[in-house]
Length: 147
Image 1 (cartoon, rainbow, N blue to C red):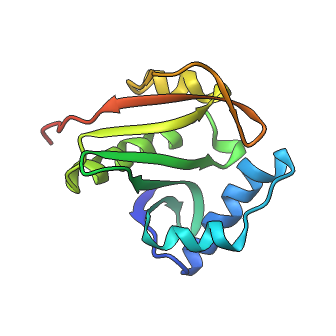
Image 2 (cartoon, one colour):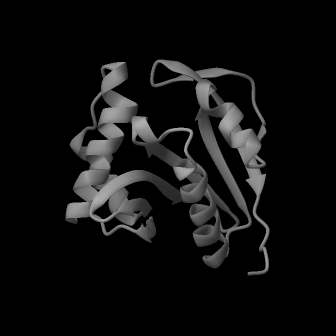
């Protein structure tokens, strides 16, 4: 499995939009707007690939000079629970550290809270509704780990 940054507008980016649409949006009856997708050109786009197939993806957005926000984490349904999500999260944390961030935050779907807790994230809010479903704010300090 190859973990890498994705260029906005590339063929890999189109795969990323499709995966996020299939896993995160369509089940809720939601679709991306042109404006939402255009705003991603300045974000850190990350993908996990096997050959040329996108297996998982996520987006990192700068909140402030110390904090980055994880968004749109998606893993192919048939690969959920098989370590792909964990691998892309570890890579995303390394990318964030390499760019000088010391904290990652997110709005996690209630159904994914357990996954993020296993990776060291803590719930920092009461439950709230976003994109029609329950979410929690979560965060984790990022610490360099010697290679």
